[in-house]
Length: 150
Image 1 (spheres, helix red, strand yellow):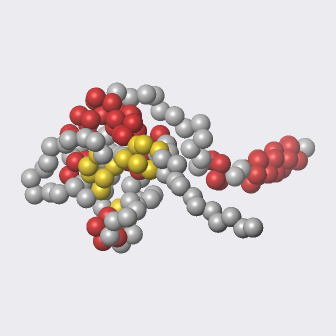
Image 2: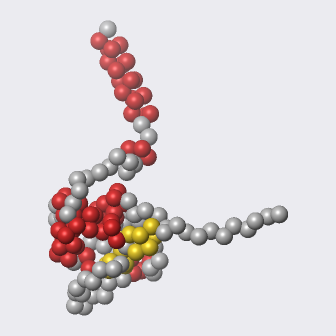
Image 3: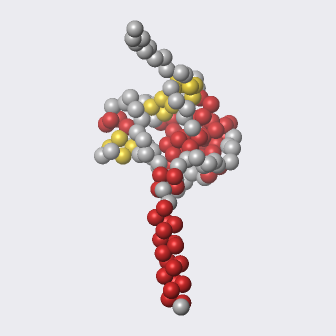
């Protein structure tokens, strides 16, 4: 009797776990950290020397001697740079490499050259940086010219 209940329970657990959709488990829907402080985010951005490689549209950032930033953040984009996308870009920079730059500039062996701060950055610093960056993105609607057929 106990063996039958155990087998039933095991089969229910297996059915439930096999029904899980990995894509949904990895979705950013519903993902939200507490709001950060954009002023503290700018300070954290500079403290962690993000300006070594990054500029920000509309911002005047101090330069780091011997380094010339080559990846611009913010500016006009044709789709929203979501909170989840910004968090992912910071904690997993190899997830999606910057577009429009020579591959050898932004990656090495397919991995981002961006330093991974996960062992050093606090959650508060992460949320502050995201709150600092997000307002710098301006979403523009792309212009499409469709041919009209008679």
